[in-house]
Image 1 (cartoon, one colour):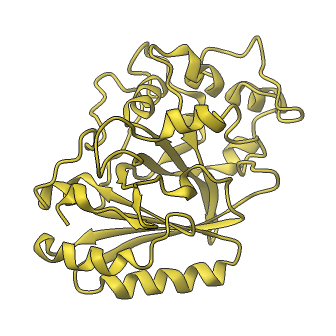
Image 2 (tube, one colour; image 1 turned 90 degrees about the vertical axis):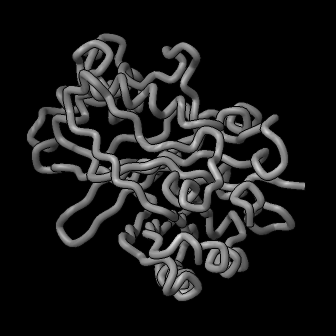
Length: 293
């Protein structure tokens, strides 16, 4: 029986590492994915397949697609597709590095590692700005309903869709704002995390309130901060039973709906982004049947 990859619904780890791969030859991908299968348990290593790889295998996954174009968007939303994404979860960054090397070696010659991002849990799951991240995430049965595919058939049920974006913060610009301006940007008080009733329409909370969409745009967010040398930001990660909820929120954040872009864009911007299909597990390992493997 297929089951979801457990890392999708598990709490955010102390540390994580995101690996993004391009595929060199799709006809060799099945062999490499079978080699990868033994390294993926769905908890310490979560795996996702990009739309281009699925297309190259002539195995379209219902719901998997590139980022949408956003006519009317007031800010750039880059789409940078990769063939394969692996999310390594744990507490020891050294162990995550070595796990990543094992994965890279298993895929050698067929997939090329193009991007690696190390993330960490900051304080009590806060962004580098100091604000809590992931507030009002669905939990328990609501999280399962929001994040996990059902009623689609063998090889698909138990799967999920990951929407991943790396954001780069201009922390100095944010810190030049007054405490009140910072709260207005987010729409919450940094001190107690309470939502501001009189926040401006551009406040992030007002732009993204999941229950305000039709249908509601619930998804399970597992975002974590990243740093590299003097740069830093957030790797936004959200799981959904389809990409629809993420795309609805992104459309509103970009200003494509009403011309008002999310105030977060005043100090941060996405560097990349794409959707990935996270297959269910069969006997504790990725179920590749939907890919014809």
